[in-house]
Image (cartoon, rainbow, N blue to C red; front, side):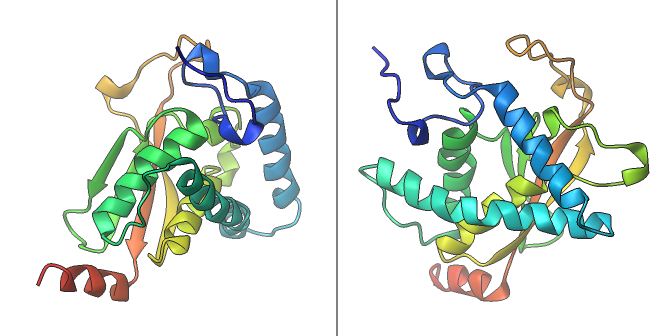
Length: 206
C-alpha cells in the first residue's frame, strides 16, 4: 500500500506520477513559473541573459535537491564516478522533482566531455508560450540550472544548457492524464564537464 507523503517537501512538483502522489497543483506551478519567467524577462535586454537568470534561479534549487534526495535515501552513497552521478540526476533527482525519470541519458559521439539528459515533455515549457520573435529561447533553462547545482554540489563542475529539439515521429505522444496536445519539441540538457572532472574520472580506470 502506497503512503501519501505528509510533507510538501516529500512530494514531486508536478504530479505526473501515481494518483496517490498528485499533491502539488499543476495550475499553481504553471502560474508561479510563468510569473518567474516574466519577472526576469522584464529585467533583461537579451535572450541569453534571460536564460542565464533562469539558470541562476534553478542553481540553488539543485544544491538543495542534492541534499534532500540524499537525506531521503537511506542507502545513498556519494557518487564519485561521472556516469553514476549522471544516472543519479536523471533518475533520482528527476523522480523527486517530476515524478518520473528523464526519458534518456546519452553521451555525445563527437565530444567526450558532453552528455545529454533528455526530457520529451518538460513541465517548465509545457505551460509557457514563447513568442516567435524570442528566437531560440528555452524556458527550460531553469531545469539546466537545477542540474548544474546538483552536479556542482556533488563535486562535478559542469556547464549545463537547455536546448529545444524537434520530437521524432515515434516520440509524439498525447498526455491523456493532463489533457494536453502533443508536443512538437523536447528538451535536451547538454552537460559539458570541466576537464579536471574528466581527468579525475579517467584516473579511476587506471
